Amino acid sequence: MRKITVIIFLLFSLSNVLKAQWELKAYGTNIYCIASNGNSTAVGSDNAIVHYSSNLGLSWTDIDIQLTQRDLFGIAVDGPKIVVGTSGFGVYLSLDSGDNWTWRSYGLSNPFVKSLLIKGPYLLAGTNGVGGMFRSANEGKTWSTIIKGLTNTLINSMASNDSNIFAATNGGGVFSSSDYGDNWTPVNVGLTDTIIYSLAINGSTLYAGSLTGVFKSTDNGRNWVKLNSSIKNVYSLAVKGNYVFASSFGSGVLSSSNAGSSWQKVTENLPTVYTQAIGISGDYVLVGVNGSGLWMRPINEMVSSVDVVTANEIGVFPNPNHGNFRIKGFNNFDRISIYNLHGVKVYESTFMSANGCVELNQYNLPVGVYTLEFYSNDNLIHKKIVIN
Image (cartoon, rainbow, N blue to C red):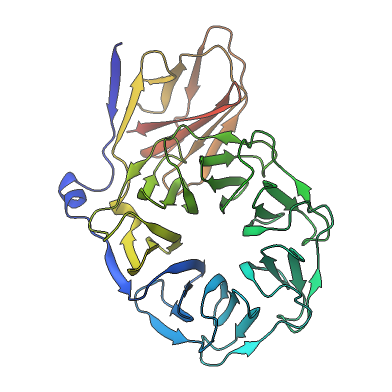
């Protein structure tokens, strides 16, 4: 089979890649949860220590909440406000960057909190069974149950965009709510694994991690496709634009620079491949390593530099180009989008092709590297292009 390889030079050289290293930022044992919002990042561990940064991870403060039950499984942050969920003592809140903490669990009938989300005027808490999902309108002073339509109450993870809240469950797949949790609807078309451990979101695009791999939806969860990847045991996901990062317990950290189309391992100098929670703070990726604390690495060190196109797959020609190119190798597709390196969609249209070839003229796009995303025969396919 003849292969056409398109080499794409990104903003760093091979010598920089070879020198790429993870850097230990916080000692500890196990890191279970990571949350970022603006300049603030909070990390929860198994020893009731919150690692907190107010400057995008440049410096860290270790905060001991001094609990008897010391596993922190859920965390949310909004400036100086930090909320943690424990494995038996409910929710604790700090309004001053961790200097003082208050127990906020009245009405929270299940004290085993696995996920937290700050959304508008509300705080949501996902638990591991009885009660399921809870909501507070007064920063946790009182709670009410919100499970209408939620047929599985084992909540592993939550994510939100402007219009929806999403909940990942342990056996019921993914649920969506457009009214702050008053009503929930399953959104599982194409989701072949309903035990979902993690969610990551970028606009209307969602990623779901499971033992069997990573799934992706580009329409607010209405339809899912399994990404073409051998990744397994995905317990945590993080996304920034087209950059997606997966923490696989047994394979370490994997990165994708093309919205999940292809992946590479980026575990250099980590003490083990048994990684836990993963998150993003500014231009850095954070990951918890089993028994070895919190590690950080710049995103731009983990960008793939090669895209391989085979003759019997979809191809882009010529590449590089000046904004005029042809897409060949299929008979029809529904939608095509173009994203820049920041993950911003710069073009979208729908097509029907009778001869397997479509020509695009995008002379208005600035010089740079772009990702083509198109939906064909219930599959998402991604290709890189260079406009020069």
